[in-house]
Amino acid sequence: MNDQAVQSILSLVNAPHASGYVSRLGGKDRASILLTFSLDARNEWKYGILENSRYAKFHWDTNQKLSLITGKFKMRKRLCKDIEAVALTIRKALSNPKGDK
Image (cartoon, rainbow, N blue to C red; front, side):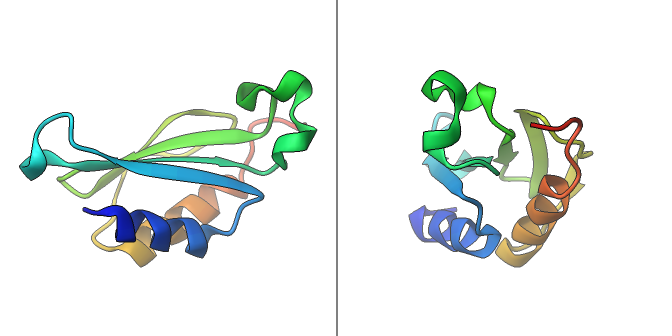
């Protein structure tokens, strides 16, 4: 998992707000990717706070499990073996919000 993987996922999901980074908190051999998406542009967030938008935060770990950490969407943990699978799963999750804006 590297910065290039993060950029690939962000470009494949194509959300109004997208950010991500590689976390090496568990060491180089246990790096994971943390991703944040919002269906609302940053200037539309009430008081400029991400959590006031239709947002989601995801974690893709070294075991290839993609988890929804927090957000206003529904998703179960999934095994995603490559970047394309991660992007597809996130796009599906973002199309299934819990509530409206």
